[in-house]
Picture 1 (cartoon, rainbow, N blue to C red):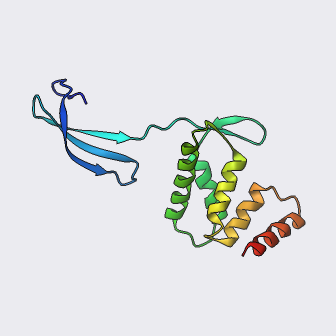
Picture 2: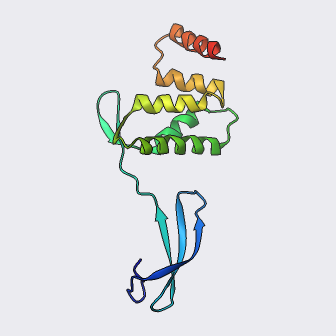
Length: 151
């Protein structure tokens, strides 16, 4: 790591701490040449992910869209916002770990449904009704019956 004061490349790590979000590490370093201290941050490099929508169009992955869809599903329900954030982070990490650069909205929707199902039955049905595009009452009842059979 290059010292910002003297430009020397030799330094030692004096202290390391995880950030609050757990996504980076803060390191205090001391330059071996000039003995001045400086801070660096280490983060995992993530590759851009493209989401393929149902109509075939493509756009950059946006975790806020997952959060917003879950907030609508959990509207007026008892849910901790930390659960929504945790689910979103899990999905984002799962997508990054596949090393695939494209993911379908169907795949993302399935991952969301899988994770909200144990948290709240009503939110699950709400999300499923939008995600699966229920066209009538029969398809809605079919999803509820399927849900009840799995219990």
